[in-house]
Amino acid sequence: MRVLVTGGAGYIGSVTVAALCRCGHEVVVLDNLSEGHRAAVPEGVPLVQRDLRDYAGVAETLKHFGCDAVIHFAASALVAESVANPRKYYENNVGASLSLLAAMLDSGVRRLVFSSSAATYGVPEVVPIPEDHPQRPINPYGFTKYAVEQAIRDYARAHGLGAVMLRYFNAAGASLDGRLGEHHRHETHLIPLVLQVALGKRPHVQIFGTDYATRDGTCVRDFVHVEDLADAHVRALDAIVPGHALALNCGTGRGYTVREVIETARAVTGHEIPAVEADRRPGDPPELVAAVERIRAELGWEPRWPELQQIIASAWRWHREHPNGYDD
Ligand code: UDP
Figure (cartoon, rainbow, N blue to C red):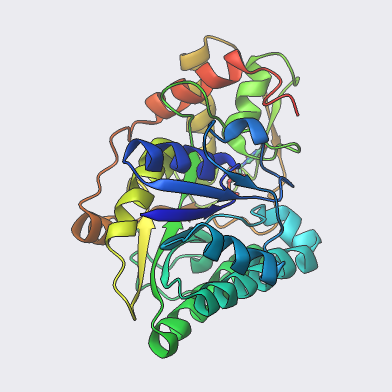
């Protein structure tokens, strides 16, 4: 298939672009490089540097390259920032997605894989969380992903759009070839921060909240290897049914606490990694772990690297080899 990948210069997007190319798809990346990195796009893959809100430009790109499908990663994705600056999130995530959907429909492109999030569930009533769990987000980021999911469901019914909406849990790790990893210009994610401490670039990591009702008082998250996530997207492309919007959790089904992540990183890196206890971070649910039966049944997907140790080891290799990220 000819696939337009929005946000294809970003972390999960770039690893998925590489996986799509390996599977013989023709890929075009559309990215405004606000978060993405030019160096993360493989040679030979066209990079269209354009904002998604440029409706005419996106429609023109879809037609010019004869795209059959879109994988839509481009978004702002930090919970805390969304609490402080919701406008950015509604504009970048909801506004830009609606513009993209309009460009797709008007160009006759009706296949979509959408990056949704476990943040759409809010504070779960049951863990592991099944896909039919009520969606009651507790932060603006989660609301924006939920709003776009709802638009996709409505467009599927009324306009014949076919979509798979992957609700990511916590993406982590780096590409297995060591080329692509997680580099945000302003880092807020746990595993990259922990590894920056191991590299001596930060004095300590903060543990946000130690009084949650979890096994050691810190938040529990389901970390999924970015290569496994990429594989889920490649499979999702083939599972799209016109007129249907299918939501699938994408996680391993296993949760680790923040303290367990730090302990594992100490074991993997051999560094001490000092940690200090801090207040809770606004907008963080205590425990997010995926129920994985549906994605297994629908896509035949199983994580190939489910162990936290494997995930952190791959991230550690990338951080050691790219101590300054992508140098842009
Ligand atoms: N976290 C932490 N210290 C940090 C960054 C994150 O304790 O410096 C915690 C955070 O509160 C959450 C978990 O680690 O419970 C994962 O956070 P991250 O930002 O990596 O991903 P999110 O779950 O927000 O998508």
